[in-house]
Length: 230
Image 1 (cartoon, rainbow, N blue to C red):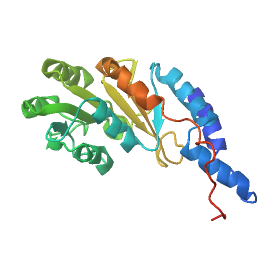
Image 2 (cartoon, one colour):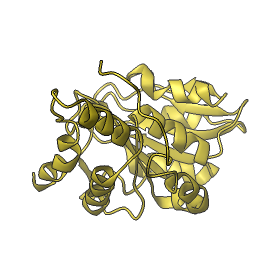
Image 3 (cartoon, helix red, strand yellow):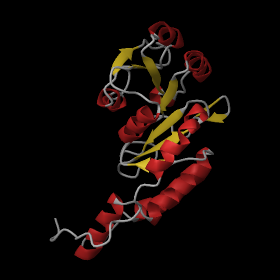
Image 4 (cartoon, rainbow, N blue to C red):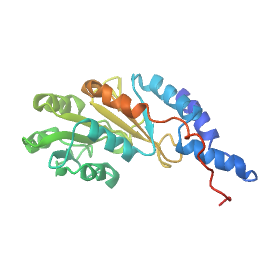
């Protein structure tokens, strides 16, 4: 796929000569503070998913955590999710102080069953987190209708579904927030990393998103480099 070639700038910053300590320290700093390689990757990813906002993070888990925060999930809220996933999908719910409410799955797909999700809605429900199990898209039309009816956020963990489509639309088209993982065993990998895409109603969080998006993009001036090479 043409997109795969666009991650070369990110991959190149990881291939640093073992014989040059200063170069290795510099590369380590560039990994901690996003630089031109990361900005190029974000730009290519934005074009590919046709989303106006893309933010790369250190992991898909962090991307989910950010989505929950921007969705307004707080201590005491409830988030409907699936147990048919890696624990990294649900840890951010607990980290935000919310309670996980398990919904059943469709035995044919492994994805959340919309009927079960609807039955789990309470006045405390703040969001639905769905996972495209094995890359098979969730029932977004039905989940979107449930989320809109109850005015709650629909968050997609698309770690399995990079490049998948739903009714001829990219995976980031229907949820309020879509998250990707670029961990080592994913379709596209940056060794580790993730991306957060606010779409749909998630764009209403634009101001909050831009506060995060405009984080420092370079190391602070005068930051000392760690001595020695591991």
